[in-house]
Each structure stands twice: as structure tokens, then as C-alpha cells.
Amino acid sequence: MSSLRDDFPLITANPDVAYLDSAATSQKPRSVLDAVHTYLTTGNANAARGTYPWANRTTARIEQARDRVRRFLGDPDPARSGVHFVSGTTEGLRTIARDWLAPRLRAGDEIIVPFADHAANIEPWQEAAALAGDVRIVPMPYDAAHDYDYRRLAELVTERTRLIAATHVHHVYGNDMNIHRMRTAVGPDIPICLDAAQSAGHVPVDVEALDVDFAVFSGHKTMALPGIGAIWARNRRGPVLVPGGWAGSPNTSGIISLVAALDWLEAAGQERIAAWNKALGVRLTDGLRQMSSYEVLGCQSSLAPGSPVQRREGIVTFRHHAIGSNDLGFILAGDGLMVRADGHCQGDQGEKTSSVRVSVHIYNTPDEIDRLLSVLSALDR
Ligand code: PMP
Image 1 (cartoon, helix red, strand yellow):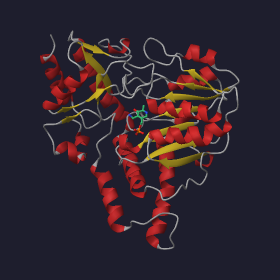
Image 2 (cartoon, helix red, strand yellow):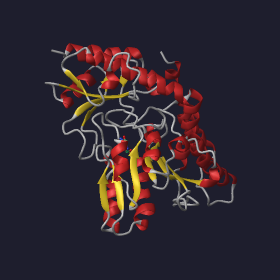
Image 3 (cartoon, helix red, strand yellow):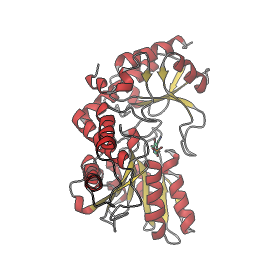
Image 4 (spheres, protein in one colour):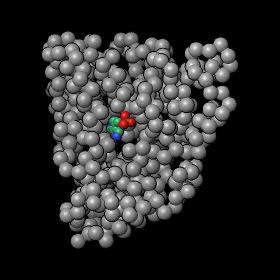
């Protein structure tokens, strides 16, 4: 068992529950809860407004938090980037679309949009195109394994392409979308905006290695409180989104929680977390493959036993051939197995029928996966 599990009060207080919905939101380690409690009970104040110590300390911590986010994302040069706090990935992507992209769009421009990804990474780009008028939305090409098709993407790029919207880890199939191949495919000049909602806190996110221009993630999926998220914006291709980053009173306790969460993740070891989650995902997919009633969605080649290509980052989604996914969700909940059953907010090119998604994190255990497999196996016929 992962000893890090002991850091999660809600998990350890409920040994009969297997929380398997971390792609929806993660549980919070004690250090995050303590950081928020300490802040609110020893120095709560608004930021950038006061002349007294609590306010000044809060302001300083928020400025330091921007650097904390930069380090978390592998940005080696703080002078070249901006970090802007938002409520989460949805607001972050929408802010980039509305405040950065839309004013730069001209008639005849193009945006490449991933229509099999999360709606939060589709609708803001459509809105930006509508705001600007006469802008063409070009669907991102996918291959049969639900990866981006980089050969076809290279062909789609033109001198009018103003942005490519991409996702780091897919929220339904769990596959890493090979973003390290995107820059080479599309050339040096096109801004790439990365939805890191499912990768941040699960696998290392390195904006330098991936050579993206924007990265956005949600605190509540990275062990921080709900209502806080971050936009990282590189200024290589123009000014950063909001240079000073002040937009009204900030979510101070959310930002405090985010710093504590990123500290916890880094101390735990992001490679260790990634390996743990991947191993649990493999255990589940291998188990499901033994049962004829279940169809696992996504790249099948990564499911072959012993395959070196295990690119599911702790998210496994499946259907039972006869039992509806919502019914299956209720059955599993009756056994304390908390999974997600629905259509998962996928765009038009996504799955048309609902499915059950299991998503793990460092506090889950092989025993929990085996418990799940044993309930699923009783329904296999
Ligand atoms: N993108 C992806 C890939 C997601 O999985 C989610 C959340 N399910 C979002 C964006 C939206 O995140 P939030 O609800 O935190 O804004």
C-alpha cells in the first residue's frame, strides 16, 4: 500500500470506500487542509490593498505562488512568462480564448480545435471565433487509437492558423496525447494551448519540453481546494495574458491551498505518482480483458498484457454490453466503489453513449482495484 495514502484524512476515515473518481476531483492531503486553516486563523487579509502585515504577507505569498506554479510546470525563466489565477481549467481556457485570442483574430484566420476532447477545450474556441467573426474552426485530426494524428495535423496547418488547442491527457481514454510531437509537426510559430486538467498532478507537466505557449490546470484536480486554477502563459509570441495578474480580490485561501498542494505533489514525487497510477490502470485493464462483458474504450494496443506501450495515465473507461452505465455506477456505489458514470462532457466527436470511468490517484491501492474487479466479475456473463 502506498504510505502516502495516510496523508489523506477523508480516505483513511473511510476504509470501506474506494474513491475512484480522481479525474473529477482529487482528495486533499492533510498539509493542504492545514495550510488553509493556518492561513485563515493566523493572517487572513485581502491582497495588494493593505498597509498592514497580514495584507502585505498575503500579497507576498500570492506573488510567490506564481513562481511556485512556474516551477511546477518546469518553466526555468520566470521573466518570460505570466501566471494568472482563475477558478479552474474551464475559466482559464475561456480567458485565453476571449482575452488573448479573440482580439487578435482577423477574417480568414483558423483555429484547430479537438472535438473528441473535453467540452471545456472546445466551446471557448468556438466562442472566440464567433466573437471575431469569419474565423474557420478546423477539427483536430485523430487516429484510430484516439491519439492526435500528427501527420494529418501537419497538413492542416496554414499561415492563417492562429492557435492549436490541445489536451495533455485525455479525460475519457486516459491516454497521453504525445504533445512532445506536436511542435515538430506544426513548426515553431503557431501558439499551442495545453489543457493540463488531467495531467497536472498525475504526470510531470514540462512546458519547456512540450514547447507550448499556454498551459491551464485546475487546483481541485491537483489536491488543492475547488475554485482555484492557473493559466501559465509564455510571452515568446507577444505580451503575457495579464502582466500584473490582478483582477479583483484574488482567491487567497485557494492560492494558499494550491501552493501547499504543489509542494505535496513535488515531495511525493511526480514520477512516483505517475508510475503508481499507471500500474493501477494496467491492473484494471488487464482484469477487464479477462471478462467478455466489458468493452474498454480507447487504444487497445496499450492493453495487451506485457505491452511496453502503457500510456493510460490512471484513467480507464468501459461499458458493460448489457447493463447501462448509470445502473452499473449505482451497483458499484452500493459496494462503496465511487466511480463516474455518464457521457463525460466529451465533444461532438466523442463517445455517443455513456460509460463508466475509473480514475485513480496515489491514495488508491491494488486491493481497491481487485475489489472493483471482483464486483465487475460477478456481473460478467
Ligand atoms: N479539461 C479536461 C480534460 C477535464 O477533464 C476537465 C474536467 N473534467 C476540464 C477541462 C474542466 O475542468 P474544470 O471543471 O476544473 O474547470
